[in-house]
Image 1: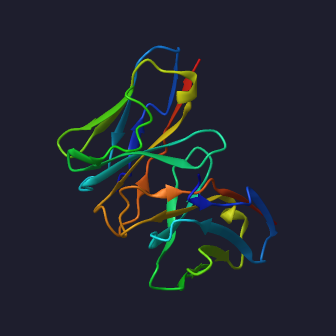
Image 2: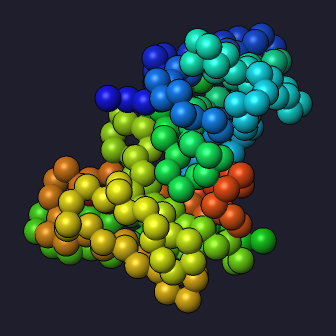
Length: 113
Length: 114
């Protein structure tokens, strides 16, 4: 039973437009959420995080939105750039601890020039 | 500064053999994690170290899997009597503290069991 779900395995967006990656979770105890980005043959790299006490966190072109009632979070990238093409993983944990981060299966984003 | 280093980057082994995967975390990072990613799957948590002790081994899939960490630094993940379903990318990550600090991942070891 997946606790963190990324229902779209892939997403294609035109350069300059907005990319929206979605993530749903089932465990209401999760209180810390992160997005990681992964290029082929490399390990994931941290992108942005949000605590459950907030509903939005912004860092440059990247914004994460959290809707606790819907158990849903999303990552917005605007404007999208070809270098953003990668697999994006959503992850969640309890108590802010990363002792056992639960990851989704990832969404492959392709940004076309 | 140097990131998380994993070796080997690729390993092909025959079913039934033992393998050892190595992880060198970022210097000074006290927390170390092992994950694996099977084809088409997300990252699956295996084990977590704080210093040399492993408070959470809940993710190890079977008793064929073990891990240790010495000197609060290098960690090895050992898989005994490998099976084809063990084929995956094994990722190591470290962080300066177990809470509130993002993980820094290595590039992984791609294990193929034939």
